[in-house]
Length: 223
Image (cartoon, rainbow, N blue to C red):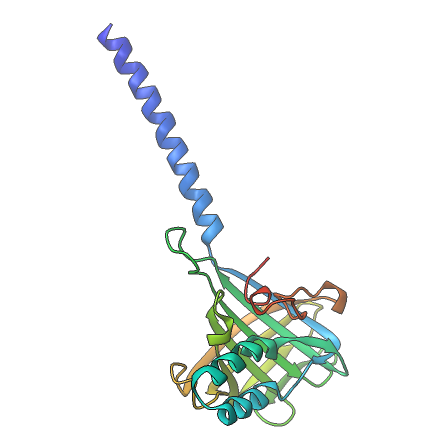
């Protein structure tokens, strides 16, 4: 009898362990960082000077309630909105779902690069300057109005267009595109990123990728 009970207990323990391992794997998959890399031809940013305009308006409003309300109306995540145009727009989006034990712990990072039209079958290197615009925004997904934005100040982007899947390498220094009231964002940081982007059309854009959302956090969560 004791041997039978022992065998039953052992079998139940194995089943429980298997279930716990499955649950752990499911949670790991659910909260594992996700990334989306894409590019569009005949596109552009909705407003190439958005971050500078935002910083100027916030500086004019000053701190306090007026500045807070303005920062919510002019969230820096809006700088990554994409529309039709004559350039190529390359997007890299990263999303971290956060901990299931903490509310509103998800985070995001958006990198958007705008370049002149490329020729397929070529490899091009573009230095930081008037022909290249690279902006980056990151922060908590529940608080997009507090996100920090930067723009490539020095460095280069190498674009390998020898296939339909675009190989992108960006290296240099990002400089804060911010108001004096964005004191928690820092001033500069290095960037060294490589990814492969797939082509999409404007109709495939979502608020997460670059379409205007109804609310700011529509654009900071990966749906």
